[in-house]
Image (cartoon, rainbow, N blue to C red):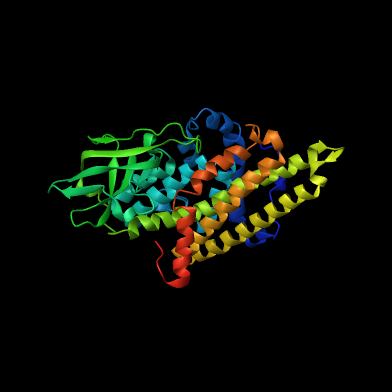
Length: 392
């Protein structure tokens, strides 16, 4: 259970009035699940560098995997604000939980739904939505992170199949995945997506160990050594970087909402602690420096909530630009990591203990501020949108 009452979760500008009853019901159901399932075991998982058992099937049961995927393919057919609220509640529990749902939803189910054949949609999406099948997304390589266009992973047409070679790294769910949506270059040097299945000869997924961040999440590599991929596993609907980048836009949108949850968890904990902890004969919340921190936390959370709500409206209307999504991802992740760090100081020495979430969130957010486009790259995306000049 959380250290604070859930009724203290901030809505300083009355944003709830702009949500539908369905939005609020979805948020509450995920919030309740996080309290009952994630909170009791997240510290143990993070401290011991283990994932939460049965997480993906649990996420499937609450409808958190591909919630915007059409009902006919196993999704819930929800809107983008619903998706954002789900990500917010999951990341209040832990970034690793949100990452698992985000990868499955935005990086695996999204491209299959958008660019896959009818056969691919019916084969994979229902099982992915239920958490019966776990997916991963292969774009980042050992030598190519912010520059995916220089990827080296490639495949050749062998007439009756494709032959795939290369490697991807920093892959969430890699050691657990049943399938991987892999982006590679064809013989003409154009990027295309392939669905690689566990058990294909030459496909291995070594785990990445000794992480200080996202310790409740399995991370690894995707290695392809002369992997024979059936031709029907090629995503037919897209060629070029538009494919993987559109997936990243969906994931970045979810992250923008998700990190608000991490910030809220830190803020609410800090508020409660500041009222209970006494020094020099009175609660530390009575001191100006502590109130300054808390007031700034609430201000930044409120700004982030408003940013995401309007971005969600734009997404629902298919008007959100990649640059707008970049701005929200960069702003909100930076907001959350600063709140995690500063709220840890309010708790003093207790802030480093597992009973409180600050250090865990701060460590997790060091990954979130880097993946799906680094903090600095998103700044340059905004700069390009302002000036029309590419500074990469």
